[in-house]
Image 1 (tube, rainbow, N blue to C red):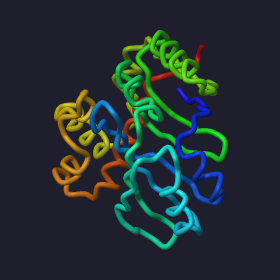
Image 2 (cartoon, rainbow, N blue to C red):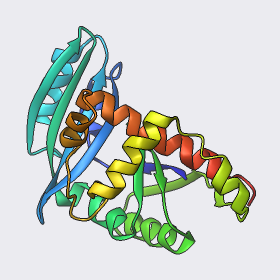
Image 3 (cartoon, rainbow, N blue to C red):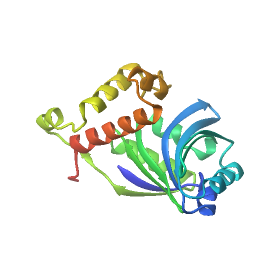
Image 4 (cartoon, helix red, strand yellow):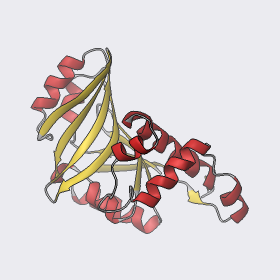
Length: 212
């Protein structure tokens, strides 16, 4: 499913530096008080963006992970629990596929097990006063042949997805890190992140249909 979320996380930053695109790579729980959020920022004013991050009230700490290009940087942010939905969607066995920060809201793509989980997530958002707007919902296909024959993931994506499942990447708490999976496949952390997300997206796009 895809939804828009009007939550305060990074709102101050992106409204201050509007020509920067912010995409989430992963989010991990640190302890009961917060999470580590890895983001990728693209734009032409990244120094100003970094200053805005440091001043953002929804961020505890900022660590630059590397400069990959003149217009692209990765950061690891420590986020207080009150500004994260991590525990809510993880409790519902959801998988975060993508999240992009826009000036006024987040666009989030997520896989949830059923409509009850969707209802719980929506209720959690409303309890916090965060606007929740569902923009796309796909329903699981009942065709066994389709589920077996049309996964859509490439062999490399499927191998990484299989390893991630078997090694506990999707477990709570997580039993293997993205860096460990990347090392196992002799690829960079970024390549592993993109391969995993694309594999999940391809798999879900080809095992779900849009019929309501």
